[in-house]
Image (tube, rainbow, N blue to C red; front, side, top):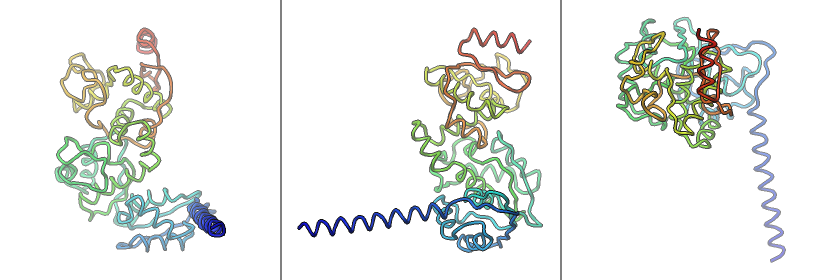
Length: 336
């Protein structure tokens, strides 16, 4: 019996050592590649993930083709990688490669389109339509009625303005032959790549769903002009939620009105809508815009402070205060 236990222990140690070595090697093969000069690769139309991984490996952009394929498979994007010509330089990570391949590479026929942060689905569709790439109505209809089983955090079909918040703002190279469906799927895949497993774990840690994080990020996106203010504004809104205080975000009222106004009146603030955070406590029912990466990060990692109020100064930065009296003083100081 003693000899059996010793043999079992040796076996366990051997297996454990082998597993440990496997993970150490996998981590090493996943490390970023440092390029001494720019590297350009061409991904042919119809290339599968295995072929793409081979091209990247042969170009010295990944340390192991299988590791890249596993990375893409685990994120559910292996069938969404786009053809075209790509140039990389400096430090290149697996995330960088996948992000670029989801956006699409340059070709002679492709149309480069930049979708800025803070837009709705309708505004996004209008940018593509202005380039002659989509029919606005078909684009919006597709976002409303289609099920996207790969993304379980999306609102169900039929939800108003359903994909606002989830069409990731970025610069994309669009093949004019692509349909509205392919463009929407590309933008959803890009969002899914940005909102990493680490971020999903963080959302769970805070007790909020991915959708709730995106809702908060969308408000931050529309309120903040300067990147440094985003985590601070995020902290203000979470502090208000903590004490059951109205969020009172002017950005949510602007969303309800549909057209931006330089100054909101009391009548505007009284506009009835579940999205009006001057009238309803808690988060609005859905995102009010498509947030960028900085706003998503701020929603997940708010600054810790005791501020409950903030005010936009003429220079675009915000000033923060713990009390309403202090907030009124800031208004007198900066908005005269």
